[in-house]
Image 1 (cartoon, protein in one colour):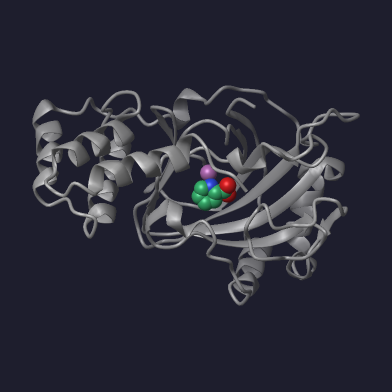
Image 2: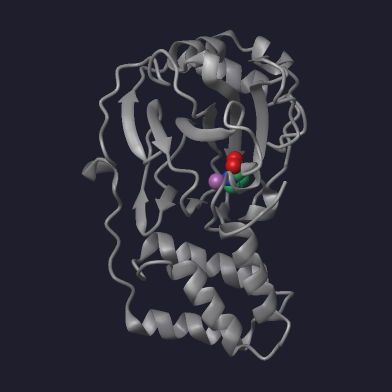
Length: 283
Ligand code: YCP
Ligand code: CO
């Protein structure tokens, strides 16, 4: 599924704020926080296979049972309405709230752990609706950095390498849908589909990374050890969102810094993480 903008929904600010306030009292899973440097990845299932809000680990749900609203989803009538009017519920496996602040996500591919799942239950299509966001939130797919605004509906290619930055303390709250990819009577979304590629107005035009900045980054080799790995990688990922360093900049640069550092454990660790986050990961 290619990344594309679908449409913009008119969010009811008042009803939304009320429900987000209530949802703040729910238990959020911190599963997948190992993908982040900075604040955790917090998620809360509103609709799930089997109906249990579960532990947030996408492979740990009852894929053999029908999906339905969870106990949390049932307490949020406005978000229920939003989910019901947006998605073809017959092919919707999950809808979750995801909250992140002050953090960057390692460039990664999702859905790798579902390779053994049967087609009828496998998550293949991912949709985002930002509910709360700000100018310091960025998404990247490959070497394209873009921003999604509140109420916009986007299909995101979760199987491609993507990354996120939420560079302030203000929480970024998205509603995230995962669908099965089997054919159905109609489209996966019930809202008017404008079917656009990433609109130019949403793309962040980053200046090319100056050579001197690249040299500065490579000198992080002087301080890179396993203990400082997160900090160094986080600096590299932040650079990717502000400057265009070319295709696969974050992983290439981190690997090059690891190659230059004195701790011999760092390079194999980097290569292993690269494999895990972008190539191969079993359930
Ligand atoms: C997902 N993507 O499939 C994960 C969540 C970050 C990476 C955390 O939802
Ligand atoms: Co992801």
